[in-house]
Length: 204
Image 1 (spheres, helix red, strand yellow):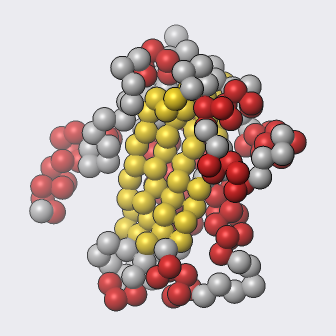
Image 2 (tube, rainbow, N blue to C red):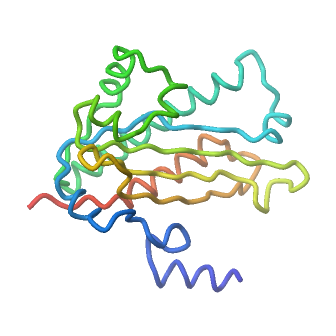
Image 3 (cartoon, one colour):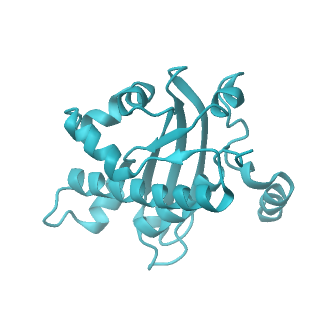
């Protein structure tokens, strides 16, 4: 099975073993090609109950820890994409995540509400052509130890403002390799890979 998995990655490249059909609409590619300004939203982060039991809550409630982790991943995704856009000379401008969060706050949209709102509607509110929304779920079962299926599943979705729909999406999983792998490290590694898979092209 391990050999088959490696062959899959080598043969199919970046999208292999993740999401075989990242485009969600027949016109996705043409819609994405019109994007000029893109914003990245705070991520939705969830820790499994097994993980919470193992780590204990501490002074900061889990809900607040998840919110902070979501903003941390938003910042990481912004930095990765802004750097990539500049280096590859992509035909998009990435809105600063602080500007995005300030606009959301001024519009009276808290983190909890943002998670359930239509993301294409938020794109229109922010005045951008599209928004990128990610979600990350930490799974850990102590009976598995630091191996097996323990790790983080992260997805990245692209929503077009004009179409009012999701136009692209991809997901990946990063496994815990040792006891020093933190949820933040796992998620950031996955986010970096997924940002690199976004279908934006070099400016002509």
